[in-house]
Length: 391
Image 1 (cartoon, rainbow, N blue to C red):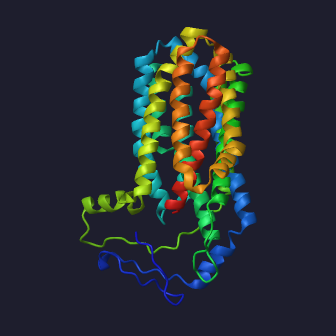
Image 2: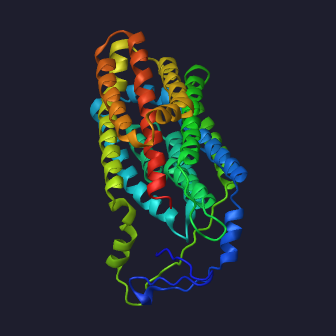
Image 3: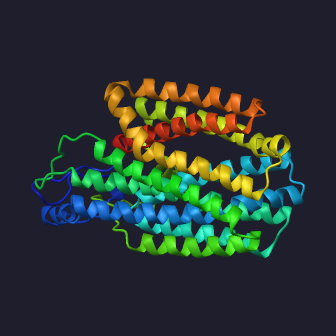
């Protein structure tokens, strides 16, 4: 695929690497102007709300099962090693899936909206597998579809970046000089919806839902509602010239072009990738021992897990909706790296102290700062990634 600048409002003129790959597509300035007018600021807000509601329903549905799934693991004697292996498998599948789904969502043939619907289908498949079997094997099988194909959070962030990128183009096709504040605000709404859903879901699941099967049925319904909101989203057309190798393209060459992401090679993107990888590694190491530790230290039951996760969800929502933007404004756009470093220090120190203490109130207090720091980091990285690679 190659992105084409326009000359005189008519046919793209830039050449691809191989002229035999070109599949001619006429893109007129009139069509581009229609695209720009179709995504006004008010319509962007509407689509952002649909996207946030979709993600909120998806996360709420899954989080309703969290208090009961930990109890199920205890009943099946899934210890730290078992849970750690599942976490590693989920991370590996998610890594592969995020690369494939991300690339597919960038393509003209698939697009963002279809990838979001694929994520909904994958989530439903995992929930149905969990509903059909309560065993260690069932837990393993249920991981595969969602971890591999459900990448809706990342795809929605890319979709929001598309909206703002499109809205930042003048009618003559030139790029406006704008800050990434509107994009940061939209990503913040997305994160806030996740936090609120994560607050409501575990609390509802731990206090009102009596069994794991009931939680799974509710999760299936919520996932379907999420799909309805996705169907209302506008998938902005990409101004691109599709390319396809004719008779002399090998399979290896197609794979190389599929995984080639030029924007990921810039120093800024490499820095963000390294930060994200190290943060993910730290998170999964900590989460593997954390739930088992809560059971040993405080004898956590489903209702306790629900209350704790609800506290995390509320704190994350506040961080994404209010704290993150204010902290970024205080430090200014040129000190975002310092903000990231301070938040990473808060995450590391907070997790160590929370794991060592036997005082439950102190655990809640430390997680207040941990989750706030995590929300700020996610907002900064998401907004900057959208700015560096908007499509």
